[in-house]
Length: 345
Image 1 (cartoon, rainbow, N blue to C red):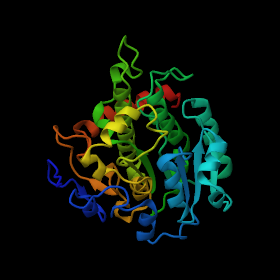
Image 2: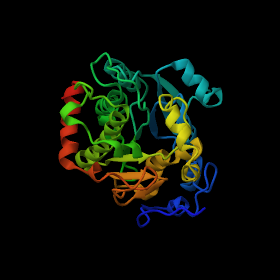
Image 3: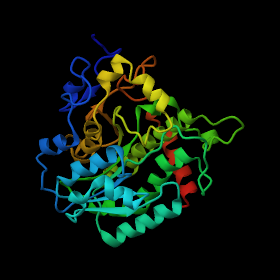
């Protein structure tokens, strides 16, 4: 069966050709893994002087992102809510090297984010790359102890606060040969909804919808990356938003089992799906690729740069970002709202 896109090819970069529908063939096809990206950049063992921080590393692509980046020799910090679960996920082979360390952070609790940032500063005076990976999806309606809708809090606000508390290290660690980077793991699900500025916590009667809340939080990931680029790009700190593609992650998808069962029967989805090792490749690409050096404000997918919006009639498998993903007014508004909600100046 032959599948085609509704639009001209959306992607550019060294791996773009592998993401054509004529080429894709499901998990394990020619699309790169995170470790292949590191290998292709000739970075194995060459980053002993660099520091990486990855959130949400006890399951899913967070684990594989750490595994790939550890190959560079960098000092890699990973955040987890449950320390024992994180140790089991990463394994002693990584942790015993002393080059991969775990930090406790509950992203549903602003106080925990602050404590994590403080602990990071005790252990490291530098930070070159921050990958904001942790996420929840389509959760039941929940408010955190800070009074924030759970998906917005976990997926966006906690990451915003962590960045804000550590941005001075990112700026100070930037060098002429390698600018610092913030990689926000968004999703094609950002196309479900714009940021709900009129009701950020879905508090109106009957307003809550798990998928719309997820979409709003994932659009927020893009807005944050774009605003980082606008504010700090000229200072050598760049922001990227990532869609990792579709993959099986029981923890992330635990509230969407029925939907996942349905989509996995679709022949087009079967071809589009990737392995977890491949799904982390776009985050790793955002973190290490020489193609991106000195530039930011980009939407990345399939370990490539996406160059135009998704067609209005496109489904979740069409490449490209929503037309509203680049919105200076919205990005600036979200930045100020996030500062207010996170209680930072």
